[in-house]
Image (cartoon, rainbow, N blue to C red; front, side, top):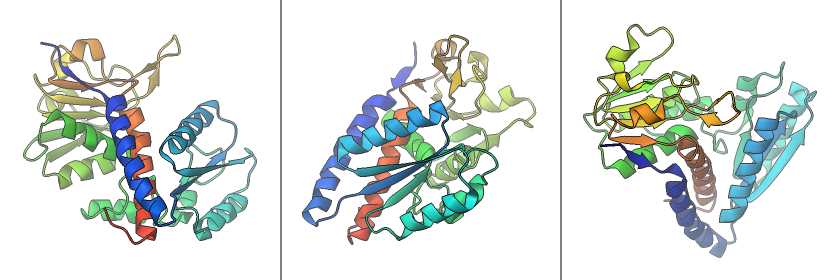
Length: 286
């Protein structure tokens, strides 16, 4: 029997509907969540991502700004702009769209964002708090994956979760969130020996490597939950994941789509973090 589909697009719509209710409560207190997005350079893919984020903000009622800076923007100019946004009480969240043009130092830029406004969850303080099991802001993509797991009804507690990838943005925080949910976690990467023997043990398999069709049917445990974080382009220019979807769907119990899976949920959790930041500023908890 083919695996059931984890529909990230439908789940993201439900999350946005819930956020509208929370934003209405904030409005009663004269507060409106604000997200500032900083886009440096003219990378077409980054421009599309930013446009999608701005549109999602407008849909739920979050005020949003997009600071577009030229590719030749200096490190000092960018840091000065972030300092202004840190000090602006109307801005509850700050997102710097990655990747940044060279020679800008992305890590230094991310660390310059106030951790209280780091709604992408990439500041070292937020990463450290996630490691300690008491996150302030969760990294958006792993946060979205955890929400997707909830819809399957498969409890992480006691499950063997295998994460493919060790990036600071996805792999590492993904492992920490699964560990906090009492899963037994294995992280695999380019140096892992005999990868299929490990992935076949996974009750929950999260693929976040960036290599098209890396995960094949013979690498998946029957009935496993498979969530594909990969974003790769086919020769025809279409979006494809790290998982051989058609083949793996015949083995897995649950599987996510690409596109229409983790992508919409990443944006939904960015909005969630922004609303949470505004709630903190208003003295509300959720």
